[in-house]
Length: 292
Image (cartoon, rainbow, N blue to C red; front, side, top):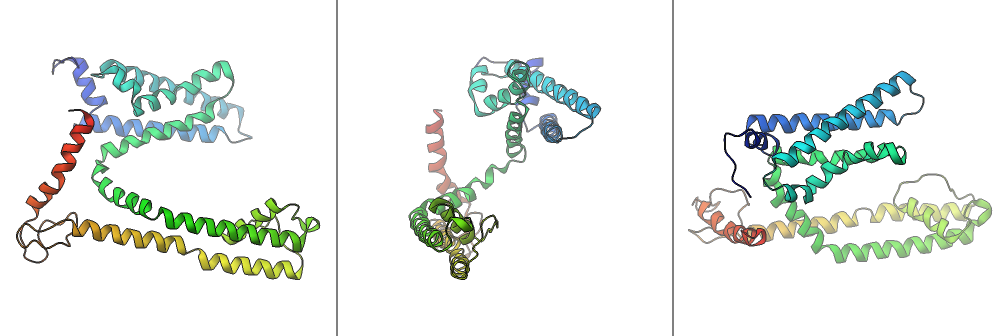
């Protein structure tokens, strides 16, 4: 990374375009997000059939205006980036490029405007602006809970798959092709729709036995719909308890503190030293991962 003069135009532009700590940087990112949302809204309106030709032309003009703005912005990012190749190969660099390519490619390969929804990925920058990274620890708790419950959920999913196969096969035998159940896979589709309480209504049983079986399928669906929630909730409670038990008070050595607690709930001792000790290994691991 080449050193830059703090007073140079390139450095100031880099602080505005890539930075978010200054008012100008925050204003730039917020304005960019509004432009992204507006461009996606224009694309959505343009997909509606029966629009007036004049309105259609105005939407096309607006789309090209947005594309030119984003093209200039992408070029500026490459120009002022301290490490240009690192930006171009990064996730945001690729998304920035993909957000402008469809309009230009449409000139040669037909209308590709539906790919412009990729621009919505650029709204992910709002996580940086609002500094929502502090919520990643709570997201990690949810992720660990899902990983711990994966076997139970897999067993539950397999059980539901077996049930829908049985119910679908029975319905195929009871109703038959004359009532819309033309094959076992289509009957299994009906069983899945019914057991999940969606009920599209495109296939319905007509015989008394078929309606009785349908009622049994629906009742089964209501009976098992809460099982995955219970599994995940139990794992989530265990994960939260594990997180509490791992944070000890430095004075009374007792566990059971929330991750954002500042004082011990038992003796009132400050937990700031404990929090620093708990986060030190994570920080060193992050440095090792980043190669710094």
